[in-house]
Length: 102
Picture 1: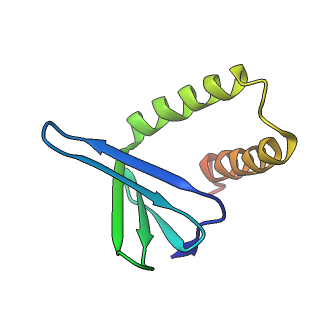
Picture 2: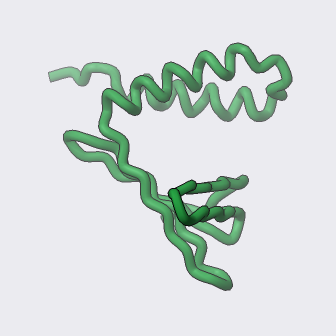
């Protein structure tokens, strides 16, 4: 598990219930990947313990990443530190997806 450097907020709206939670610097995350999907787990251990897990199959993940890119391109208010951190992460993703030499 890695420490969360910023903040994540999660809400799940079901017919009879609404779940909301924040994961901040007192929380951690873990990312796992297998042949079919990527998994993200957010865990808050201080105070009331809570965990959220999301599993995204790769075609859906690709659609989400494309839509994230479009949303970021339209956001003129994104400051340089956030933009640079996202750019470095995007480059790491491109490197991870590049074909490997045999």
